[in-house]
Structures are given as structure tokens and as C-alpha cells.
Amino acid sequence: MVEYASITAAVTFFVTSLGGVYGKVLPTTTVKATALVVTVARTHNVSGPQARAAYSKAPFAKPALRYLYALGWLGSASNLAACKAAQILGPDPEVAATQSLQASPQALAALRASHLTVKQAAAAIGKGTTDGCG
Image 1: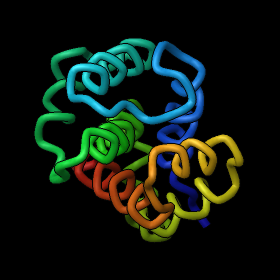
Image 2: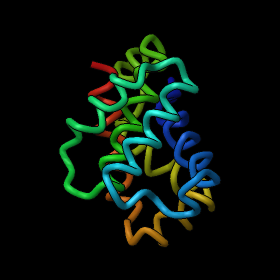
Image 3: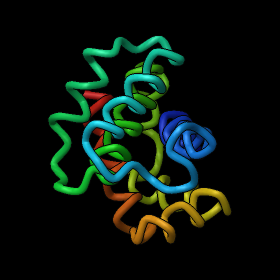
Image 4: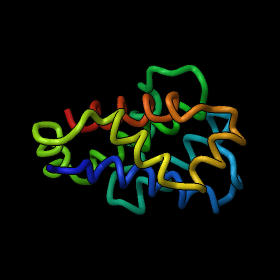
């Protein structure tokens, strides 16, 4: 079975960003979230303007969920070929995101600290992954 490399990448982006400027919680403002998304994008060969656009079009109100959506989008945009293959052959991206998040104690701790559920986070990452693959 083909795995969603983009989901794994998004969760990895999420976990590694936790050690950065904003600490062990997800960003709570648009300014912080956008800055962090752009930083992550640049380290994975995706342009800053594309990252900002992905954050801006996220269909969520909370900056933390918009941030997770953008990370899902970046995971797809950084490896389109693998993403398209996984869309055809892999599991639903939300299911894959749930599994990846549950396997990461750091991600779970950050979600708890940010008052988000795994289901909310997985929905945001899954939607971003699908949209970024399109």
C-alpha cells in the first residue's frame, strides 16, 4: 500500500516547528502562523508567497487549524508525484493524518496544549494535503 509521504512530511513539519520561536504550542495568531508557515516552506523548496496563499485559503477560523492546513498543503506541494500516487492508492488523508499524529507524543502534547483534538488537527492536515495535491 502506498503511504502518504505528504502526511508524514506535514506531521514532521509540525513537530519540528514546535522547537522553534513559538514554543511547544501551535501559533495562536495569524501573524505568527504565517511567519512559521513561510519559514517551513522555504526549508522545503516551496515559495513564501505560495505558503502564505495556502494559509490564507485555509477553510478554518482558528490560526492553529489554518497553520495545520497549510502544513498539509506544504507536504503535498513539496512532493507532488508522491502525493498524487498516494491519492490513488493510499488511505484517506484524514485517516493517515490521525495515525501519524497519534504516533507522535510531541504532536499529541502540542495539540493538548493548544486545546485541539486529534480529529480537528487530522481534518485540517488532511484537507490541506488534498488541496495541495490538486
